Length: 182
Image (cartoon, rainbow, N blue to C red; front, side, top):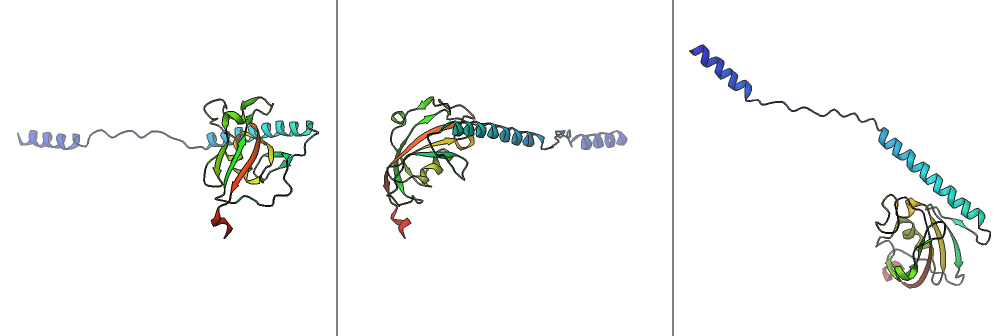
């Protein structure tokens, strides 16, 4: 009987450990990320080639390449204004959004006048940097590859994912941030 109780006790103690969960087998090779990076580079190269083709065919305008990864030309230039926008300045501007082919996605009237505080509020990346180039009463047309536009997300309305954009932007008003004058 003692033997039986000892075996029973050992069986109970051993079985209390419970089953050992299996660990998932996971191999991180990095290939997914490498492939994603290569797809993004290829897409960007295709979009930049399309933009360069537009620029080469446009004999009317003189395009400027931005270090931020977009291109632009002046429709109306204000050579008398010398104030350069600074962080904290509030501006009122209007803009439209078009496909690179010139098809209107949103008119300036649909978007309406936009109030924006430089570096304090979010716009899509290209527009965030583009407005900083403007002086009062200037109108500039920008060509944005998709990473500078709405990227992989789109705007969840009329702008699809990975869509390069063309936009004419006009700066109407600047309210200078007094802190930036110091």
